[in-house]
Length: 412
Length: 80
Image (cartoon, rainbow over all chains, first blue to last red; front, side, top):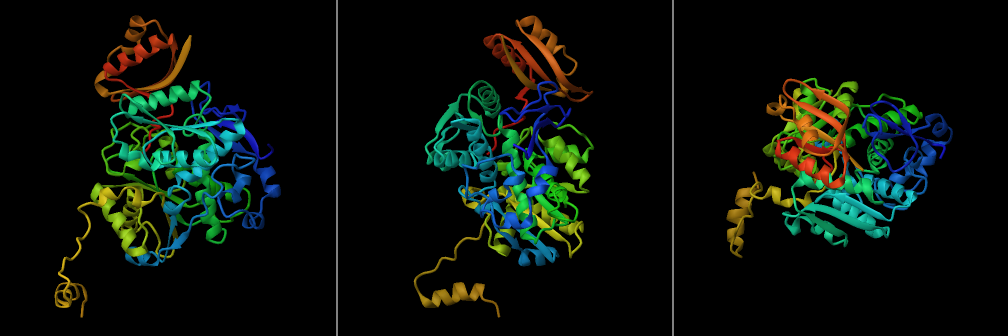
């Protein structure tokens, strides 16, 4: 495995072999995959990538997998020039990286789970697991089903079943744990350490999180092999945000792009903003919070990669901002009515924060700015109830149509 | 003997209490602190609890009852 040197602790730097481990035995810091970029440089090229599969696997030289077997169609989502939203925000080169149409389960999670489960299969695991009710559970359930792995999904027992229909359809074993989210978290961690299962965001997390780098790789390729000037991305655990940064840096390291990696702007929901708070208060540690926001997909009160996200924001000359529930809804609506993209609350948060930064003037109008849309609005339509226009009711009469519809909606 | 790696987060009002030493006197477990940050308004520790499985579980329940947040090292893994 020439391209990978091994795993290294993000805190103390101690090195480990490529195994399903995720925590440093000495300082308990998280482990990360380290690559031999000199070796990778010898074989990687723009042409080789462009000839590769139309999926995230075209970047296999920079991923910790030798033989991809799971999620072969994940990634390679559209990068859309957002002319209308750009006009609204005064940005001439605004782009949307649209992972709301990622395959197969319509969120960026298909990227990370594709990498995690491909690696898990290489390790010889036959069982995939996660604790989630949302995008992660959807993706693990679907990709486990398609790759013939057994699948366990852990949820708190008091949760309504309709919240996990999008996972249940793939027929995983759903384990309803008597307890709250914290109890489920703890139990999942214990199970991951004791059973021979691939818990995607626990024991195979070093590999799982690498999948998010492809969000940077694709954007650079789609822009004609260059880094944008700035990106806006949501912050949940902080992993996606830090890996996008790592992705652009790797491209520069191996010579696929020449310009500098972008300034990294992070978006959190006001009701769950522990990373934003640490950044603004100049702390390098995270004070956990109890989430209270409609942006459930990014509501992580105790984010594992929070300190690293703070570091990336500083290192890249970026910034962080928060959006209230109302602003998140407005963000969803703004993206929908300007670009025809229906995102969920994480995307609403990103757009709301993009708008705030644009209004503050942090972007030069000519700069290339990319906003990452990570999930699909059709999964959480209930958040928009009461926030959209009602239909215009009429009798089946042409006269009433002219008076009530044409009269009210057609101007001049 | 089992061991469990945990992160303990103390709320401000609990910082002055000798919670860990009480836990070790109440339950038959050892602790091994690997990383910690204790300040006037918050404290967190990453540690290993070593002992029999049921004793560790009892100790965790006790910690939670004392108002300590007990999370896995991975932070919050449950994501919507």
